Length: 467
Ligand code: ARG
Image (tube, rainbow, N blue to C red; front, side, top):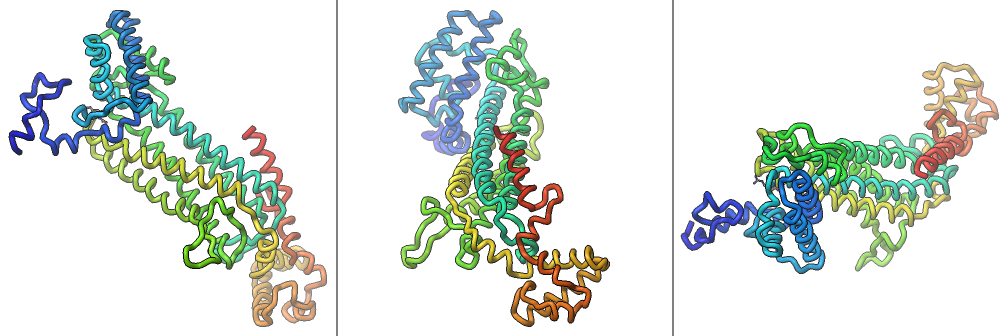
């Protein structure tokens, strides 16, 4: 490359060994400040905890530590006030903050990096950030669950078709269907909580990779930053990105749940289904077709999930071949996690809004529940229970009755008793009582079944848990 491009002064942080500054392309590939500036609050909190610890252990004078602590607060308010100039030449958030600290307080700033490296610094900052995202996901999922519980409660005994293969299978209740998502999102919540608990160990003080010869107190910094304890192995502390992978994995599973639900909402809001009406607030119109109301939010949730899954694969791929300890590859962790976290929070908020606002169309649900021979299983069960038929034979008889109804273009309850008897002469008038969809769902009293009483019991259990 040209002299002109490499003639910049050597880096102030490690200039001792370097005669020249980086090539412009080197700067472009190396710098992370365009995205890791999001870690400024964590970086400053980590540095303040570190400086206080150094002073408490006689490694820094109280005077220097106070100057550093105060100076960092000044830098923080500059950043928050939009008055901070982020410089690409200073590579990342750590060096941007430290360089500004030097301008603000002078010489003592140079003592902050004692017994520390950017390796444990970035690991700490990022862990704090991801930990916070776990809490935010937890909260957002809580709000979604509350919205789902309200839907479930309102329609605990409304009947709708239950599907397998997207073919009408058996009637279920609207409340039951909503509660299936409560179970899924509650597991997602548990995954974020588990991940948070596991990641809550502090890497700070691992220094570059081997620990430090200074008499630091890692328990003190861990406590100051709200971690349960310091990480026990300095190599692991700077190499580990499990916490980010675990967050992404939990986000991915949650994203899959969101996407499945979004898909159902797209189908349900179509003119062919009319199971739900989405609110105007979460729909869009068409510029050419005046009748249209499109479920864009649901479609976008379904689509945006691809970003979360993509980020997850990307970071797994970055990490999978890295020898211990730190490698610069790991700088690629942040954009993936930032994007996945932003996407997840937006998708959760949009889903919560949609669920809170949507109206389930009770009449359409019931009409659909009654078609497609949805109570065929009830009929077969009745043959077993009342006539003592083996289930396989009952299945066969019911199949013939369905074929007959299909031929007559009617539903099962529309067949006369004579027609029923033409297939099996043991059938009595009593059969009609099990062919109604309400009776069908009410009979599914097994634990976790779709009977309104069961659904209400589950709603009550979750409401108690959620508090
Ligand atoms: N910007 C870097 C990152 O995000 C900070 C750590 C740099 N450490 C190093 N040894 N170059 O990973």
